[in-house]
Length: 74
Image (cartoon, rainbow, N blue to C red):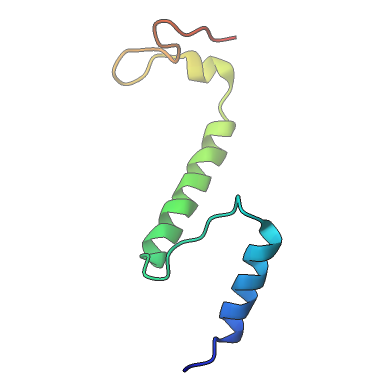
């Protein structure tokens, strides 16, 4: 039987240290695609955080504002 690599052991230690709430990608997951998606999400979040409330209240490309009917925006 093959011995786990040092990386596998380190990942297992980190998982134990972080507790039950942490989640990890499956070993067969498309890691490169997931990395790109995570980086893109982080980039979008940074850009979105730079917008002011007035910029967010402006109309969108489809003509609607930020506040959807039935939702209050403070």
